[in-house]
Amino acid sequence: MKLAVPRETLAGETRVAATPESVKKFKDLGLDVVVEAGAGAAARIADADYAATGATIAPDARAALADADIVLKVRGPSGAETGLIRQGAVVAALLAPHTEKPAIAALAAQGAIAFAMEFLPRISRAQAMDVLSSQANLAGYKAVIDAAAQFGRAMPMMMTAAGTIAPARVLVMGVGVAGLQAIATAKRLGAIVSATDVRPATKEQVESLGGTFVAVMDEEFKNAQTAGGYAKEMSAEYQAKQAALIAETIKKQDIVITTALIPGRKAPVLVSEAMIQSMKPGSVIVDLAAEAGGNTPLTKAGEVVEVHGVTIMGYSNLPGRLAVDASSLYARNLFNFVSLLVDKKTGNLAIDWNDEIVKGALVAKDGEVVKS
Image 1 (cartoon, rainbow, N blue to C red):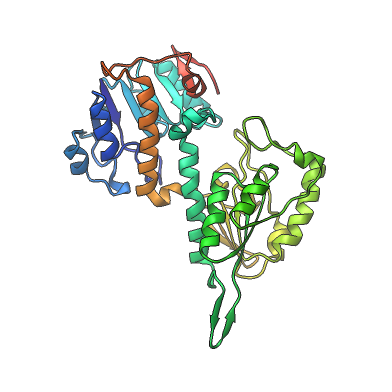
Image 2 (tube, one colour; image 1 turned 30 degrees about the vertical axis):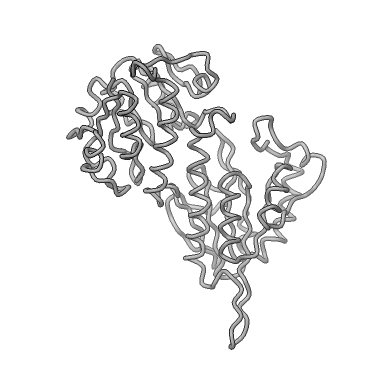
């Protein structure tokens, strides 16, 4: 069987779906791996590195995708790429199924078997395939590093002969994988860290990392988490109470990291313009939800702007700013997922359509969109 790894076509996407390490593992599974020339360049992987582990280097996407049985990408294929994918081929990528419905419909019309890696179920068996967690972890780390680089002061408390420098204060809004890594990173840099989230279970997690938890503790808060571990959308009344608490808290902060996302919806506004105006000049906000509209009304996706004396960083692809490590983790996630689809003895596709991981990630099959 042929496994193809084309170059990413989305502007600004620096990651790649396979590394020399994963190519070698795919070869051990009995797959022939074809990588489009330059696919790993932005992640500092040379074509020669792929070739050294057994990959064939194709000159362009057409050659890479020709007769491929499995296609791996970071972002979903472009329209031109979709037209090159053969009927019955497996496509696995971050397909953004909530917002890229026409692209998934095109994959279905092409006859592809499409898996959206975002839809992997949150179960223990799928942890090694969980691309959202692996990428969010890096995003949380990079958010703090970027904020520290932008901030005009030191992060830790420093005691010198000339006097003491107070530590920076960091507020993390949204305590998922990215938020927890942001808390841990800010603490390692010596900041005073607080965090907020609408899910009760996160309070203990924040405190275990040395942070202070900030939330309105009422009955709605106690029931603000789905069975799958995601945050529910809160009532307008709760949002108003929480906003008042955050408005007072945020005045004291030097750096704010916002991470709140609700799958398939516009990102909720957590930091209003009035809150931004109340922040100290030179403060920094890093908005990890910029691509989904932003957690502030002043965020501009893909840009760093200064408004009311506050710098708002709206990078659209934070994991891509750590392309080497992000690609390495993503490639391992994909290998673990593809291993589930391939017979270890024959090297052929042997998909168990009743497997809950397969059913969870599947979005297109037999010419139909099965989930969106």
